[in-house]
Structure formats: structure tokens, C-alpha cells
Length: 620
Image (tube, rainbow, N blue to C red; front, side):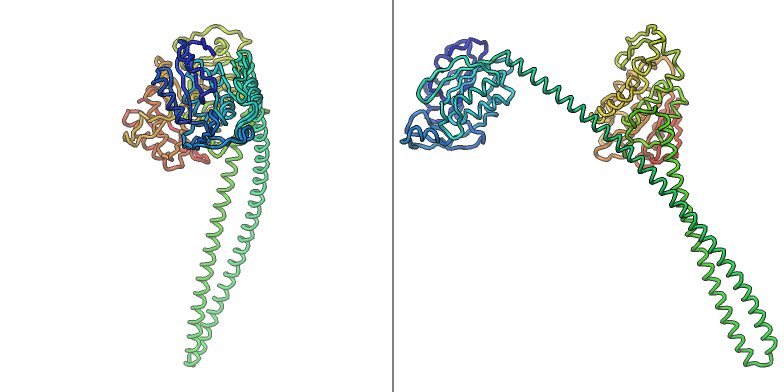
């Protein structure tokens, strides 16, 4: 077989019955030949015959899927040695006997193609005479990534299986034909072996590529359908959760009414006890008067008088003891009443605060949209409600958010609502092109018609750049937030940036203790260029990053990173989760940083469920 392809490589497994080595080594188009042969005698003969020919590489190894040391059996029939059991060969030659055994190393078909297969810029021919392992090698060729690199396959196989793991020639041919090869030549070279020459069919390769693309499209469609099913399931779960919350609210109200009734009964009992105490006190006073009368009447009778004194003393002791018991019981009742009242008051306040915040936020969102997912890690609803009011109240030029999620969608809706209601006339002057932070120096505005402003929340750009710059460290969370923004139609006001955590440069911690923080300096530097010639109102929201190692000061670099580029601007900051000790330490570091830089720092704790602090930083 003559090969005329440039830089051609030949990978031969087993010394073939029809030896083409001499012919191939003389061809200039053959770059190199790698021969895999397990029989040690044949390996030695080949090395002596070709004397380390520069084009020929001989590997002393067999082919086996287990890739271990195997026993090679040499029979009294030359040319049929194998590491596989000679089942069919024994039936064909009943007198077949093993003459010699060798322990040989083997290599799996997958590693064979990976280590000795062609490079990307090479074409190759695969010669297969792997007695007992030809089926495994053909299957690995079909399943692996090297399928298109082998332009020719020269297969030596038996019409009927000769070894335990062998396969008929017709079956091997069917596999190669189905994989895109074309049988161009078939020739019996002996009663036991057939030579089959295959070449790649380029048309079939294109069909395979198109088939794979179709499978990928089907897989993408299935994934989208799965996501839609998941979203619908989440919606139903949220509805169920709302029903449970309503039932719980009703139950708490019933418990409160029951507690009020119990408190009323206890007050009534307390009043009854006080009446009895007054009656007893009156009785004691009457008894004292009687004793005094008896003492006066029985002065002359010493014995009776002494007895009366003893009774009087005992009676006084009893009265004191009863008074102590009554006072102690009254104090216990008062303490229980106070504790119960405090518990009821706090429960009512928490429930009322949560309900009011949830109602206000749901009323703010447009009806009919898919509800947002407020999970355990989401910013609390009352905190989001506070942020919405601040956005409505203040005309922020840009909002910087560290840590994306549900809060990003709420902020985007608040910004879109403010822009559509207060800045319509300004927006209609802008064109429909959006501007990313990378293009702020080369963008110019053109006139837009009033009809274009009507599609404000879908195509128009309100300001330069986008109003919200949100950083996210996790790719999965990034994709989830991006999808949610798109589903709510507010992605055009958010520049969502995937920013992996890197060692923070702007941190007050020692170098060896500095936490990781978002890779955000590139975007902040470009933002500083935009606001270089004017004063901008900036809102910074710090709700991240998440620390895989539970570093309590993971959020400490946030303010230093922002001030590195925007220290001349008035900045409002919301730091979430400040009920935790780590965030309290972050506040102390920030205050010290502002004092060192000569900036005015003011922190105001917010009355929210998870705890948050509103901070203003101003140049002096």
C-alpha cells in the first residue's frame, strides 16, 4: 500500500502477515512508523534487521484493556501467538499446542491512541493485527477523539473469530463503515486472514458533525424545558409557602388572643387575692383590738396574762409569715406577667415588621411577574424595602453591588421604575445603544424619537454607563442571576460581572492575613474615569463575598477598594448582616480607614431582621 499524504504517520499494532515496513520506510511521504509488538523474539529480530532506523519506533508491548502484565502464548503454529485464549484457533487446528510462554507488558487501546496517535497537524494510518484485541481497538477508535485523524485503517482479521475476544471480519467492517470509513479494498492473503483497507469518507464526517450538532441542540432544548419545569415548581412552592405563612399568622393571632385571655384571668385572680389580703388585714386588726381588751381585763391574773402574751407573740409571728408569703407570691406573679408581656410584644413586632415589609415589596413589583426567590442567604425583605425607598428618594448616578442575587433584581426594578417615571424626557434624547464599561471613552449620543422611549425597559440606555454594576464570584450564581434579570426584563440596567476572588490589595490587614476579594478594580477604574470631571452620587451595597473558609473579615476590603478610585465622590453604603461580630469588626476598620484618609464617616444601624447598617462617607 502506497501512502502519498504529507507528514504521514503510521501506527501499527502487531507485525502484519503482509509486511509493508520495507516499502513504507522508503516512502518520503511517511514521517514515522510506530510498531507495537509483544513477542520478544520478533522485537529482537526487527531491531537487528532495521538497526534503529530513524523513521521506525518499536514498542515491546501487547494490547489489552486491563493494561497489566499478561502471558503471551507461542503455539506450534507460527504467526498466531496471543495473550488471548485461542478458542476458535483450537477448533480450526485441533493439533494446536502451546510451546513457549512469555510475560509481556500490555497497553490499553485508549492509552495507545493517546500516546502514539497522530498530532493535530498530521494524517495517519492505523494498521491493526492485534490478535484477540482488534475489536477493542476498533471500538476505542470509534469512541475516541482520534477518529478523524486516522485517514486510513488497514485491518487484518479472520473470517471467523480465532480468539476469545475476537470478532468476525464482517462485524468489524460494519463498525468502521458506520463510523464514516469507506472500504476501498478487500483481499484474502491466507485462509486465516483477510486484509481490509478503509479510508475516511469526508461526506460521512460532515453527516456525523451535523448529527452531533443536532444532538447538542436537542440537549439544550431539554435543559431549557427542565429549567422551565424547575421554575414552575419553585412558583408552586412559593405559593404553598405563602399559604403556610398565612396559616401561621392566623395561628399566632389565635395564640395572642389566648394569651390575652390568660393574662386577663390572672389579673382577676390577683385582684381577688388583694381583696382577701385586705380582709385578712382587717381581721388581724380586729384581733389585735381584742387582745388589747383582754390584756387590760386580765391584768390582775398573771398566769392568764402571760398566756395571752404567748398567744399574741405567736399570732404576730404568723401574721408576719403570711405577709411574707403574700408578698413573695405577688412578686412571682408580677415577674411572670412581665415576661409573658415582653414575649408577646416582641413576637407581634417581628411578625408585623416582616408582614409589612413583604406586603410593601410585593406591591412594588409589577403584578403577574414570576416571584423572586428569597432564600436563607438572600438579603432580608425589610432591608430591600429600605433600599428601594432610598433609590426612589436619591438620584444615584450608579449603584455598585458586591454579591449578586435577588437583591440585584429588586434594585434593577427600582432603578427602572425611577428612570421611567422621572427621566422620560432625558431618555428620549438617547439612542437605543447600550454601553458597557469598556466603551465609556468612545461612545457618543444621537437623537432618538419619542416612540423609541416607549420601549424604555427593553432597548434604551438611560445613562452612561449602566446604572448598576454588580460583582459575583460564583459562575453558577452568576448565571442564575443573569437569567433572573432577563426573565424580569431589567438586564439592560445591570452590568453583571463575573469576578473571581483574588488576594485583596486594598486591605488594612497584614499581608499574610489579607482576605480574598472580588477582581473588580478594572471596572472601578473605568468608572472613575467617567466621573472624573463631575460629582456623582454613588450607592455601594456590600452583601458579599462568601468566604469558603469562614473568614469574618472577608468584606473588609470593600470600602478600601471603592475609595481607591472614587474617594472624591459622596458615597452611601449599606453593609448587610451587621448583627454578626465579623461585620461589627468590619465597621471599626472602615471608620479607622476614613479617619486616616480625612473622610467623614457616619454609621446608622437599621431596625431590620438580619441587621444592617447605613453608612455615609463624604470628603471633608
